[in-house]
Image 1 (spheres, chains in turn green, red):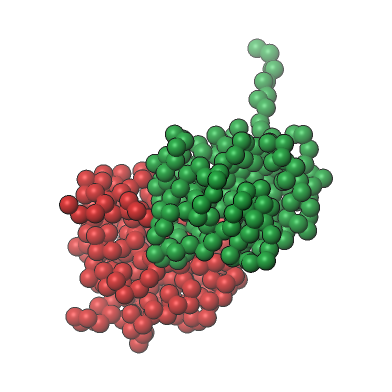
Image 2 (cartoon, rainbow over the protein chains, first blue to last red):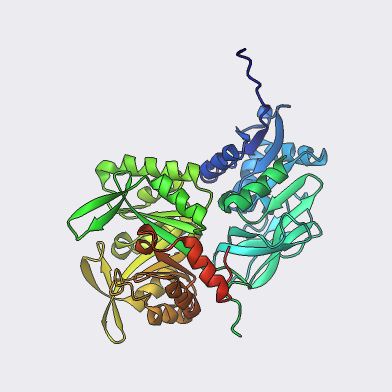
Length: 201
Length: 258
């Protein structure tokens, strides 16, 4: 028997370090589903080995935006999305793709998508728990996923899925290879893991 | 036909509770000893596969000397679990909470510490967000309509009225209340749904019902009474019910599950 091992190419995911909370569960989830996560602290770290970018879902709008602008990672993300390379935003990582947020008025978002993040009229604040989403897309439609949020986008021209808790709001957006979820796929069991695989591949 | 519970909002959660001591899941035996039930990660994964919506770890011995051990367990769980989990028991300060969240817990549960230092609730809500803070409240029914709050694992009675405390906890910014009816704990006669229903009506915070569950019907009853989630330990650990059995029973009653 020869000792040749065939090394399968593992896709590297650049996880934007927003310095807001631990990224432990997210990293573990990426590894579980077969990706190699790499923490991106500054623009120089982005090389051709990275196949997709991920903006994690921890922290508040203003805090995340301030981290992105001070490191210059905001420009990196804008160039990345202009080139239509794969990007996944989670929770506040969805929200910063929009223009502004009621959570931190006066702070500009990345503005990749038109619209403003609003405070949601959830029956109980914050929204914490599992909810069923509606979508035209078969891999999202009728799935039950885990939400943790007080803010959200009410309508968007790039809506891929919606959810209803007190009122309807955007559960997922999509344009080309850009995907973003208001829910936490890394906390949504096997269903969420499958969604992450689909969007990052 | 009753309305489909969970169809227009959050689905009622089935939560499995695991008591942890020195890195192992344990079960108390007649207040004397602790029986080893297994590895926390293995058991949590088992319940995740059965369909649990969330796991609560109550580190019943999170004393200072084995704190490192408890944190290591939390990190191991976070690495392996793909559903949310909470940690509680022995958390006394803002620093304790920071440590456990940093180790990978999605939520922390405060009990006695919140009673002793209510400002802690505000500080944690502001520092980390209400979503990660569960306030665990142990109550015992004195007589018909009067519930007292107990602390220190149910050993010490306070002079705090339970309904005043629910209100205060909500106003200070807790995300959820884990409400254990001590007078039902271990009885197997079902949750105290009179209590749960009153909280659901009077307060605007999610309530996890705890204490008394022994079968699927008890879950159905408490969701119908207004509980947002319900927690059980023994009925699952003893293998009498799988989480999936409870979920099947819920579906038959028009209660949405995942």
